Image 1: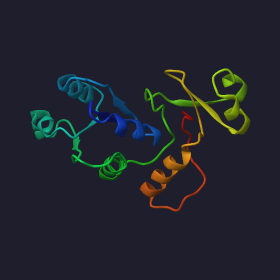
Image 2: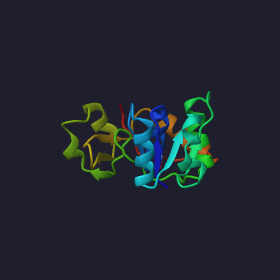
Image 3: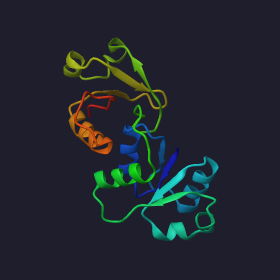
Amino acid sequence: MLIAADAMCGGVARWLRVFGVDTTYTPGIADAVLVQHALDEQRVLVSSDQKLFERRLFTSGRLPGLLMPVGLRLEDQVRFVMGRLALPIGFPRCALCNGELVAVARGDVADVVPARSLVWAREFFRCQTCGHVFWEGTHWRRIGAVRDSLLGSQPGPPQSRSDEA
């Protein structure tokens, strides 16, 4: 399932990407442009803007959308979207631009990865779109905890990677 997140859902978009969900997000995008983008690419539009969903495209069922409740913490927003849309957790996408990640050799990224991370990290990934490099960084525990709560499972070995920074 493809997702288009509105301008207020940047945090949710980033988390969805970390969980492998193809999610577009453009800060400051106009509602009309966002709606047309979602329609053109057959994406489910996610927003907390009630008025947005009063448009005929949504009321007629031509464009699927998900109204996110206002006031949820970010992790609860992610849980809401993942659960309501029954999104599977997959291999991460670039959290910055939504590009696909490919494995790269340590030597190929030694000039952009901090030396301390080169010492202990075993796998590195580069975004095919923006070139950003990712690895299983120090904040992986938080990502893993959210992933495990979404899966309803006990903590286990990581199944995906994220950027150190």
